[in-house]
Image 1 (cartoon, rainbow, N blue to C red):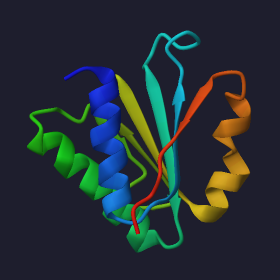
Image 2 (image 1 turned 180 degrees about the vertical axis):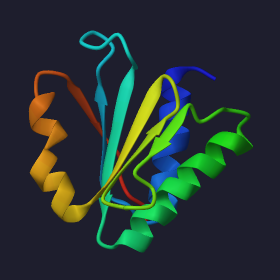
Image 3 (image 1 turned 45 degrees about the vertical axis):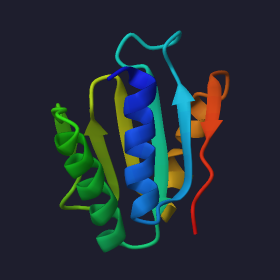
Image 4 (image 1 turned 90 degrees about the vertical axis):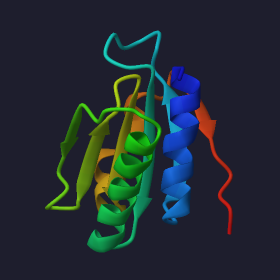
Length: 116
């Protein structure tokens, strides 16, 4: 599975659990760590955890390993390292505070349409 396909699997997992404002940042040219950051948020701790759990489950279902999962118990900012894609699931207030979109404003942004 290439990084773009992995990004789509992760974005769908986020959408399936009703994540809000899902977007990806193409960081291939500015980061040697990963190809994409996928960013979304939720309005409660439980929803943040549900989204993170779904991303992890879909990765495993597709035969992929989760390299690292951090922040799950606190549910304010969960980071899921899938290798070529790093997923950031924020609690709504934390997303605004850390504002990763601003830090990477020179990179290409990919927005995902959410299914209602």
